[in-house]
Length: 240
Image (cartoon, helix red, strand yellow):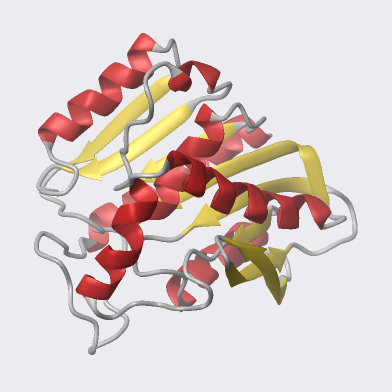
């Protein structure tokens, strides 16, 4: 396992000063890189640790920010911030491009081998980068099966993998079907994994006793481990 170095990176996006977490693998050579987008409440230590884990696997990894350094424990505040973002693909793309610029500015990043992985709102961000035609090698989204504007999925130039819990009321069957139809109609190389019995945000362990959760959210330890292995496999297949 490689030694990882990390640093905080600040950058402007959406009228805010974002506070991302950059993790670098050992060595000095250029490496494939991963954008890692957090779920709606924002970037926290769990997602920072995921970036560190990716760096241990040899990737440059940037866990990007959505809310200017905030992590929401109040679901009403979180929804007030996220729902307008999810209704505005251009804002999502701007968030993603700002983070991508930070990743590309890192000398260790191989600009020809970048993937985007996102959870919930972060997944919507990386999907919109794909719909904008950004040159990514792979896109993975968990709990973030958000459909885009008509016809724009045809701009996606890489494989897309999506994971969702079967009991997720936020990404319910109708939303899953709409996402699958969008990907299929656009000719995307896509896969959808449904984790039986899992709810929304099943990948994320409880981290704060003060956090209130929206209905339908719940951690599923076994499926969280499986989903992480699926993410790692996606990256290994497409980043080389």
